[in-house]
Length: 190
Image 1 (spheres, rainbow, N blue to C red):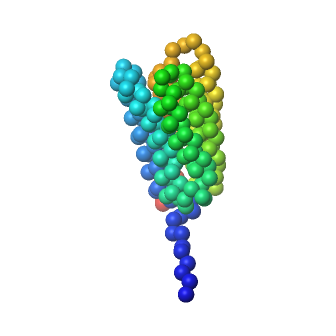
Image 2: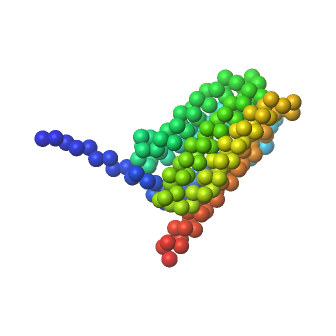
Image 3: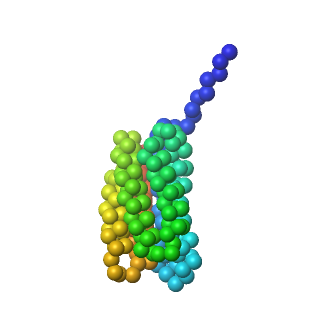
């Protein structure tokens, strides 16, 4: 007698899961930005922890979302985003001696993470629509990555407040996506 294992995880996220995921990503990013512009500007150790923590959070969030929606094998762009984010977490920790180096690492990460987010949004568009904000966010992230690398080579001083606007735009796009899905769901139920 043979036993067959059935993968019971959905291949696509449920609208409720995705909406909650986007609201959670918004809340984390908004809190991160508020802390970056507030306390972290004057507390270098807090800024260092936050700079290491931001790509780690992104990696964990991508991992959880992919696992919830069919696994990493079905969500290659999120698998790649997870891998790049974890590598970036380590690289930021190593680069903490120079904020310019941290900015280069963030720039490279933002470029790759943006491309993978854009690809994930395109893939999900077929099932949910409402992914235009994620696609736009991914494209803007890739552009921000280029700008971070360019800024790191400049003479202007850089710090956590240099990275905070990038996180603020990310928070905004996650909020827009969550609200858009909420409105779409409400329209469908009426």
